[in-house]
Image (cartoon, rainbow, N blue to C red; front, side):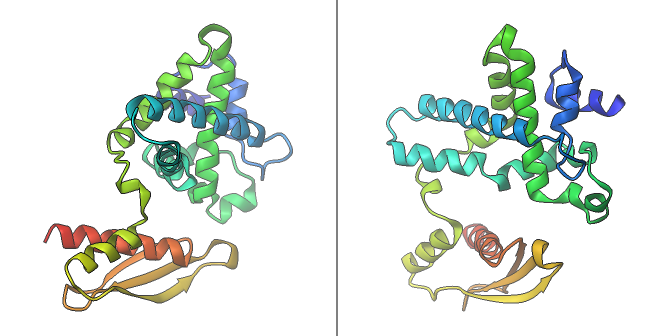
Length: 228
């Protein structure tokens, strides 16, 4: 009960039906009665709220730009970061096997829980407030990320932006190397370096795939170069 109250405080919402919140925090490893259906609903609600907000904030941008902005905000990586910032992992109910394997830290589990909670709040509040309450909660949580949205920056991934920046300075293109791969096959961690000749020491980053690790390394390298 105390755990549910803490989650209510995190999202600044008091559930009339706490069973919805409990279900939203129940991972499929527990059994058939889990949060997957609420996750499905929450995903749609989140997409609609973010779409409407981007439509309002960027009246001159075309559909393709708005789509890319929305994707950057509602993707699993962003949602798992939000869940981590909210310390949500410690409140998710997991089966014993999933718990032992560190499931409460798994990005997909965290992202799914955030969407499931959004779905639960929508159901719990829609009779009285319609979409307004969940809209308020989502926009509060995403406010800082929405404020940082720059249409031009979100069109290109970090590797592309780094490459274009180096080309504009007539510098050598980066070289990426896989340093190590750790973890079990279904939850590996890739450690990758990004080396730029004549710039600085190599930058190292990790990710759940080689692509993600390279993108993270490129982002770090770009940030380092710009602030030199």
